[in-house]
Image (cartoon, rainbow, N blue to C red):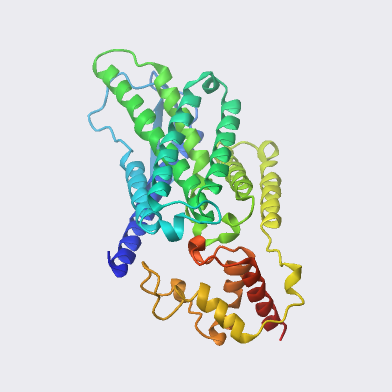
Length: 396
């Protein structure tokens, strides 16, 4: 397919993914906040567990929630599911266009594991499918009755999968896959647990049967899983823009810190919406700050001491850049799939290399995220030479 058309397909899918993702996350966050706002009040109808008074856009709203379901089903019941389904579908399409179509560049890194694009795509599909079944089995096992232990086991499972991804795919490919796995779990919770359970409750009401309260409880539990996974999955999905996250030798540990940080932030958010006193929930703020500090220190760039005393000629730097960078970062890229230089960064002259020295140092030297897919087999010595020259330019 023409690189220009692929670029437009990428743009449109990303745009659509963001739009429907906002709809899904917004709806999810709203209903969690609504649950936290419910209060027992005098005069509530039979079966109503609580109500909430809301104000927005100049209007006032009174919302009630039933413990299980109303005695009679209203004819205009509103369902919330397509936001989740479309978020997954557009996300998977984006994964296919960017990571499957350009697997050699974005998904595969020979330094991690040499394989064909077909093998990489197959491993991707199998791991995402297997991940859902393992998670679902844990939730349906006796662990499901012990929320704290279940959360710990799910966390351990996600980190194990991340460790596996970092030993199969490129750094950015590994992080996008942990994000895709979490997203798959979240949408599968909606598709296979939450919505089917709601349909069973509706069917029981229509048939005059008393709905099983366990159906609603199971749906609520999966919904809460989703809300605590939302903040981490957002960062995983944009991680390809930030190599400091996925290029660390122990990137799986960085992913663990992201999950803990996101879950702590979301927990504090939810409990604050429930009007818990700060004296009870305030500990989450310094805890999250501590986790963030660990992540910042852990991912700090480390300059190889060997670069300090090296002297590298301009001609040698141009040779290195021409060999390893210019296929993409040129006025007319020669690498298949690239119609123009990524982010408009061109590295065909010494002046251009100096202009983008910070990006070159970050991407090619300290994080070693470039060249894409390691397809040029850039050696460590070449990275040191390039880094030494860049440091010398800064010292001028």
